[in-house]
Length: 212
Picture 1 (tube, rainbow, N blue to C red):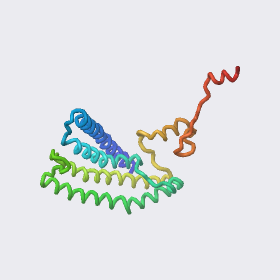
Picture 2 (cartoon, one colour):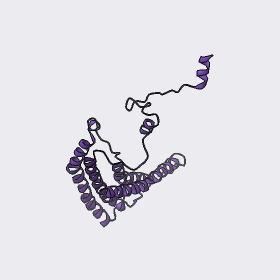
Picture 3 (cartoon, rainbow, N blue to C red):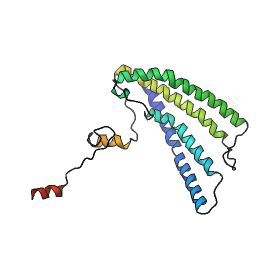
Picture 4 (cartoon, rainbow, N blue to C red):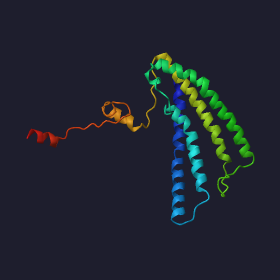
């Protein structure tokens, strides 16, 4: 199980980081459109298509990566107060009730949409450029398969937690600034949850003035 978890995490991380470059393409398209539209008065017919296709590809293909890093939104009002074994048990049940049926529906429905789109070489109707979009419909299926692979890894994580009483350690990755501040200042900066608290270290010159 541990080997599969590591394998799934690596696959999800590689795909997520590869598709993160869609941000660069999307930014270039939007920036170019703004410049030529408002400076040269010559708007493009393809920038809008590029922006929503890049954002859609990034959103779909980063889902498994986010799941592997436990980054999806969770209503953890009660969850965070439970012991790890209780958390794992609840997650294990919910994966089979909600996650896997939803992901399988995404794969099968996405396959139908992609096959139909490829059959008549679908193009975008959002602009006069007629940008081909049939190839992007296959991303629905790919995203579903990746989520399925990562979802099995998450189930294994729950089983390991039920066995060991603690969640398996995840691979190191980027962290939110809030978590970095907690680690850096030993919970002094954000001791009251997400509410920032100023921590001011005494300056040497002020200390010297007091002594005088």
